[in-house]
Image (cartoon, rainbow, N blue to C red; front, top):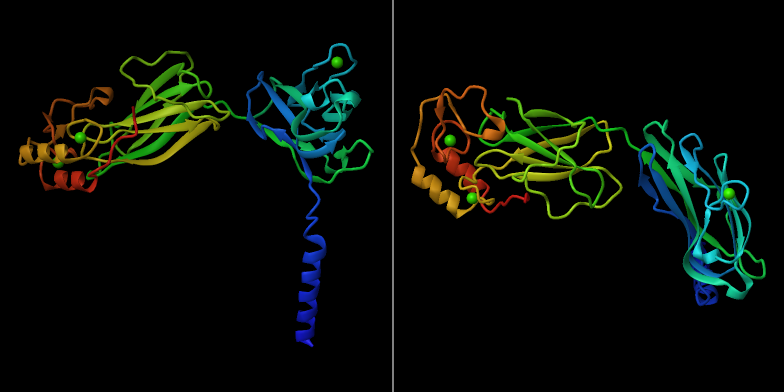
Length: 360
Ligand SMILES: [Ca+2]
Ligand SMILES: [Ca+2]
Ligand SMILES: [Ca+2]
């Protein structure tokens, strides 16, 4: 019995393949909002495009979408028509637009192609809505959602075309970042103080830093760096990265430095009230400060091997000066800051052999 069922299933499967496979699934067209995710602050405007994708023989598009009215204010693109209108996209330029409203938390759209233009196939912009983020908008992520039952794509005969994906988007209003924090340790020591955390603040991707700040870690390696309120371009000796990341954020470029250690650099988006850069361990061994830990450092440590000064000593480092600099100065090749150059410094350096900094 079981064998017959299986056999029957196989026959059906084969028939399905023979009868239906050549025609394939009917093509579907998608409707989506682009970009799907935007970060904007109160007062900013965001431009969201309604795209139709993989359309075939499209003549008419209808949709309803909702947005949070208390946060987003649509801007009118048609002063000659009552109410607030979306911008007409290239797919419907010159067409007939019986419904185009962006009001009371709802986007309503009904449009026909211009008859002389013929039906549309491919990917194109149906409409564009521009929102202003209201001043009183609270930090949160706000969705813009198509009502799936409302989305209709029709051919010139008024026949519905199969609809595939229908995807809305979201506008994130981030909190104002007031500070950055993190925990920075170093190898071969339990004293983690005085690592310099230098931060460049970028107002957007692709811009230049408008301000900067520096903090030093405490003995446990923790730091908290308040975001400066004014603008103050970084001094010339703070090197800028060659490229900025993309994405809809304000960015911080964080640089970690300590003598005889490889510097580390990170991009961090500023989308939290306090941005936590997490735990980072600086790699020891770059005693000649050329950005890499390699044979030149080993050679120098061996040359200085056995040097020692009386403890306590301090590692000279102007950006994060020691609280008490009356003691002795650590030898130049002392990687772990224990006042002598010995096998521990050599071991740390050998373990990190080949590493290079990712900082400019
Ligand atoms: Ca209007
Ligand atoms: Ca080196
Ligand atoms: Ca040492």
